[in-house]
Length: 536
Ligand SMILES: Cc1cc2nc3c(=O)[nH]c(=O)nc-3n(C[C@H](O)[C@H](O)[C@H](O)COP(=O)(O)OP(=O)(O)OC[C@H]3O[C@@H](n4cnc5c(N)ncnc54)[C@H](O)[C@@H]3O)c2cc1C
Image (cartoon, rainbow, N blue to C red):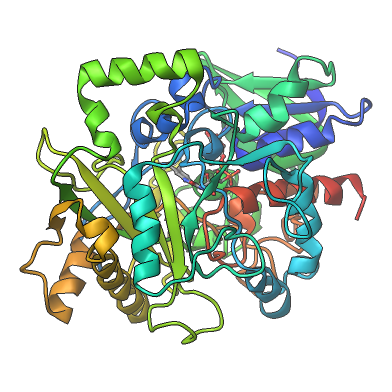
């Protein structure tokens, strides 16, 4: 069969890929193809905010687990990554944060990512953001990515924010404003109580109208095709057949921080010895491909409530039916909740101990929402508080299990390899317990079940962290931009030593930023579009 031809082939229709497909196809002369391994985003759970709680496992994910975690009791931890149009932005918790300005200044000043200081990336954050409430220098109001306030916080979420204040944290109405520190309600990537994924924000409004944009779903890209050191297209599997697509201008890899390095390795780009061990001919020996994996290691505490104030009360079928009806008729009620309603950024060693917070907290007004997290006894209701070290020092890797594109990569985040990560993580658990002990939340709580009262000593808290911590879904850095031997990309996101190929997603981050990673991945897509079009 004749190969199809385009100017740009974008591999992976996730947060960054959807942005690039929309932006590059603005030029009617550019022929753009977006190819996504997962299906269309038709599952209704994607579009209702509460659906997050049902999607961290199952058909919209790749079903990954980590390699045994040496510093976490050798556990193989479930590792949710999206496999559907919209990628992470279709299944995530919709929390809208974008790190601290100093994260981007660090990329530029210390990590060789010239042109990515906060002053450089801020215009892209603003261009992407369509905030329904906040405006001014820190916020965009007209961008495609809708951002809004939760409609009606659960009573326990309100009590969480009050408890944080009782513990001494200031109330912060805007984690993306002048100061990150404090507690408040998260803004979410939602519009009119519906999820606003990157597919909803960027792709769907243009996909049907632009004859120069082709979207292929259910197409697993097997490898990038090279002529010498120039990328010329991709081969992909769909419905049992292998096909080829040509890229006259560029192949743009946006397969996420696990998918992008895996695809590069399968295509012969990576550490030569690793490729040779799997019988893959070496196109470019780039030692950094798949290395530098950095993720947030979230540690949850869970409390059982006296009553049923949290969302868990809707686990009963008749209540769930009412909630569903309320949402269908009025688009309100518990289905409009993203579950992770309240939050905080704070300091492991007390206020002022660091220039910026080193811990982030996510309050879930329910228990057992995410795969692999402890819950309360059946029939009772609970709440969960997750915290993580914002800038972990541990580094892991993504490597090939074998040369079969259908096989899962070996994902080893190497959680807690650095003792500082454990120390700060443990402080997060202690502060979480202190928050649950403040008057506003205490009145709802029957008992903190995880960790229970037997966990009291430093050793006990450390053991708890090793046994209960898990991914917070923020893998980054596996094809990092910058300078030095381990940098895979130059600051224009071009793969070093190759032509006609860039990697433009969360894997390009030189280091993990201090918050959730969806908005930053979308920012990378926005900036990449300008770099590719030569607007910068
Ligand atoms: C469960 C969960 C909850 C999260 N919660 C939040 C949150 O509340 N707030 C926040 O800011 N961030 C959150 N995140 C993180 C955020 O969503 C991600 O950082 C972001 O989506 C990453 O964007 P990306 O473009 O790099 O990759 P992705 O969005 O993961 O996109 C990669 C896409 O490429 C596809 N792909 C991979 N390999 C191939 C291949 N070989 N061929 C074809 N297609 C391929 C994948 O199927 C996927 O759709 C969460 C993530 C998850 C998984």
